[in-house]
Amino acid sequence: MAKVTADELGKEPIGKLLIKQAVPASIGILVMSLNVLVDSIFVGNWIGSIAIAAINVVLPVSFFIAALGMAIGIGGSSIISRALGANNHEKALKTFGNQITLTLLVTVTMVALGLFYVDNLIPAFGGKGSIFEPAKIYYTIILYGVPFLALCMMGNTVIRAEGKPKFAMIAMIIPSVGNLLMDYVFIYIFDWGMEGAAWATTVGYLLCFGYILYFFLSKNSELKISLPHFGLDPAILREISSLGFVTLARQAVTSITYLLMNNILFSLGGEAMVAVYAIIGRMLMFALFPVFGVTQGFLPIAGYNYGASYFDRVKESIYTAIKYAALVATLVFVVLMLFPGELASLFLSNRPGLSAEELATNQFVLEHTPFAMRLVFAATPIIALQLIGAAYFQAVGKAIPALLLTLTRQGFFFIPLILLLPEFFEETGVWISFPIADALATVVTGIYLAKEIKKDLS
Image 1 (tube, helix red, strand yellow):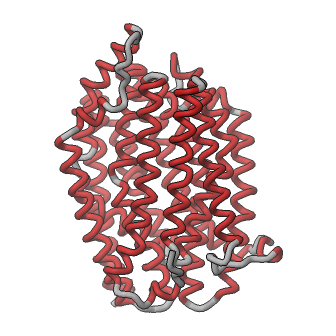
Image 2: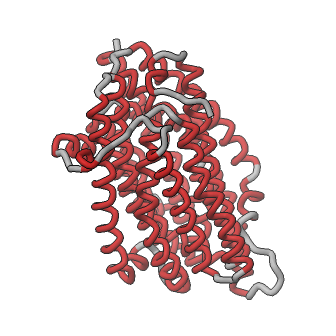
Image 3: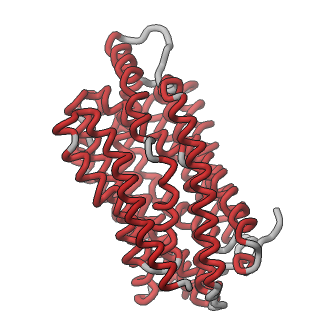
């Protein structure tokens, strides 16, 4: 693997640089997304559709705690990218040390609270009826590995900020491959059921943490921190927090969305309707991987060049990233519109000996998922502008507009819509909330981004 230095972010042509950054990021996200997808297929086929719903209930809690690590990672990485662009190497080192200390303190505390309130959290997120017991089993085991996942997510963004996307890609692939292999061993061979699914995921987190630790201890990393760098610096903490809060707020709103969706859909159609949303949720993670890859590739390029005051390159990176992301989003849209039923059927078991309840649940899911999927992804071709626009403000250290634009889709539009529209249109009201929120958020982001480019980058 060729050694890549951070200063290439300010020298190479933007199109070539974005591909170099975005392709490894997309591959890493693809493998992670495939992991979630295939993991759900394994769970659905080997345990049952209720097990998919149970995992869907647990995800917002565990992902929120893990998102603390991602928030600290992205907030700190924005500082690191700009510091490297301005040749302030000491600030980059101090920031990285503070990221590690802060991630450990926050996530361990949150895990302790999450385990203490387990019986309250699961029902609140829709783990009711027959979903509760398998959700509790999965949740309890998963939470032990979440601090390692948080450190992995934090470390991955720092690796990318150093301009080393291939290493970041490998770090994303390792837990996915490990999880799938352990799924086969723990669920299929050992027949451990939900415990097997949870331990497989946790082992994947541990493998990822081992690789990231190796990266930063090896000669591949330019960030060689020492003990004094771990001491918390109030000024750096404030900057990490203000920028990282954008990511954390987004994940908090996502967790609230899961809570509302699971409860609303449970009231409309019981466990089977929650299973429909679980499949839709997996496709949202999987299908948009190339768009998220372009966004991840864009962040260090925009941050570095902004820190170096190369404003023409910043503008070019914005336009190029939107163009690339819109193209791949359109391709995703076409596939999802053509094959929703085939995709839904992958998650359902056809093994002999299914109970009447399982057969009825599978039939319900097959009947309702294609219609829902087409509505949910109806505005996919236009989301590139919203994602890149919000990411730009985070990359250049403008926390308030980054926060507001990040919350625009889910917080300002989507949550009010799913509270209002099901009252009039029931199930359809839930699904049409997705494209309406996408369209409104894209318009708002486009207007704000255009003003910012004219004012700040001219």
